[in-house]
Image (cartoon, rainbow, N blue to C red; front, side, top):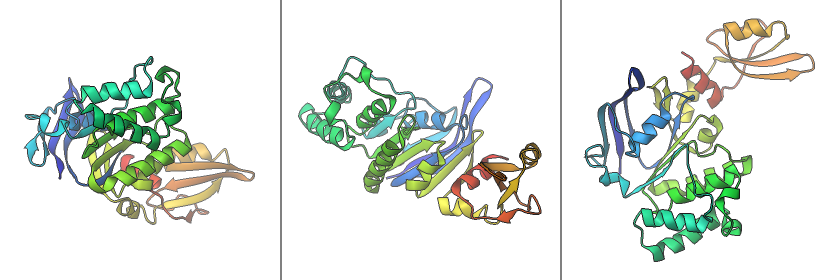
Length: 286
C-alpha cells in the first residue's frame, strides 16, 4: 500500500502554492509539517481528490488518482481544516447521514458509530445537537466521520486545532493505535503533535519540500547549533534582529533566550540540547 506524489505543482493564477513536490507515503503516520501558507492544505486537498495538480502525478498503489479518483475515494477518510456540521443534528444523526453519503451498509454503520462515539468520548452527548458543542467536541465529531468506513488511508488537516491539551493527547493516542495498518497523513503546524507520534516527517516551506526524514534525523541537523543565554531587555531587539530565536523566558535577572545559530551568538551563550522545534525553525527560516 503506497500513496505517491511525483513532481506535483499547483498554481492559483500567478501564485505557485506547491513547487515540484515528490514524496511517498507508506503505512504508519507521516507528519506533514510546515508554517501557515506552506502548501500543506493544498497538498491535502489533492491527495483527497478534492483538487487536482497543475502538473505532476499522484498515484495510489500505482493507479493515477487524478484520472481515476474512485481508486482512492472508497478507502479514504478525510478531515479537512474547515469542517462543517449540521447544527440541528445530534452526533448520531450526523454520522448516520455521513454513512449514507458514503454508501455504507447502515446496519454495520450503526455499530461502527457506537464504537467511534465511545472511543472519542462522545457517548454522553450523543443525543445533544451538535450546534451547542464546543469547538473541540465538533472536531471530535469530524474525526468520527473520517473514520466511519475504517479507511486504509486517513488524511487529517490541522486536526488538533480547538482541542484542549487532554483532547489532543487522546487524539494522538487514537491515531497511534490505528497506524499499524493505515497510511495516516497528519498535517499540522504544531510541532509537539508531530514529535509525539510521527516516525516520518515531510517538511514544507513556501510550497517546497525542504526535508523528508525522521524527527531524530531532523534534530541531528541542528546538533551544536542551539544556544542558551541570558540577556537584558535592552539587548533583546538586537539579538532578535541578528539571530533565529526559538524561545524566550522572562526571569528575575533578565530574559533567557534560546537561539538557533551556526556560530556562538554571545560570549556567555552555552550549547544546549536541540529539540524538534529548533530543527523545524532552522529548516523553514531560510
